[in-house]
Length: 419
Image (cartoon, rainbow, N blue to C red; front, top):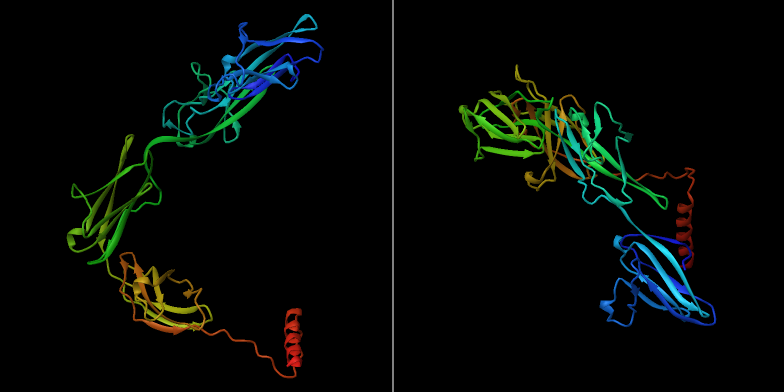
């Protein structure tokens, strides 16, 4: 037991087979292995930590049966195992064939793989199993067939060759492995995140010109997508720019920002942004010109609600640099402006500060923005939000009470009677 001439197990598993007879006279029950060797290692005859992976144990029927135990099965354990005994004076035997299979294993397949733009590149599916698996590929849930774009590698049939690689070939690919034999069938897939190595490319929303004014602060931004990610360098007058008291550089994925505090006229002019990886280099010039500082705006509160303040904001336009937006800071009186909250409004929007606390005094100030930056803040304005008003119940009015209100009134009345 279990019944069957073939026993199917997976590598690493454990199981046992019982051999016994219900006859009256059963002698010399024993097991032999695939090469005819007798298996004599009994559990209990050796220390616990030295018990072999394949050993025998007394069966449930005492001397009439012996169990053959397999632990952590390997593929070298495959073969025919035979149980023999003398049963009522006759030599009897039963055999079974042990088939050991290895489950599908993608442990050597990389979850992220790369193709090379403009070339033919190969994606790897390193899958192991017994029986030997057959492999197919899918991209965006579509099965891939051999053709001008895709081809199965002749030397490594599990691998996929992608021809004339473009950025559109990036995405999620799936390697599907199938095991099939007369005894078992199994399949498993593995997702490969495919990226395309390519030289830097500018994003469409690019910056070619910027404005600032003396003692103003300005951000010059350079964005380029690349794989591997590009390294950014800022250059002015053939000199590489490094951080200082007036210069800060902030690098992020595919983006670099040069933040300048303009302390002198020499800081205006051309700035060169260079984006570079091992596949190529891009350069772009951003021209920083002297602009006009926005006029200080006028800020007024036109209406106060329970949780909001409605504002009127206005500032004089420079002839060549119109006002684009306003920044409003607000806080509780006595708090430091460093911890104030802020909101940005495009010019012409409804200037409303929402989510405020009722019956609370706020102080606010505004700054105007044009292409050159922000103005100084306006004079401070103080205003209090409205208080939530309770509904008034007039005498003589007919009022329908809900069940909870009625219950409260009944409770109060009952308490009064008791008192």
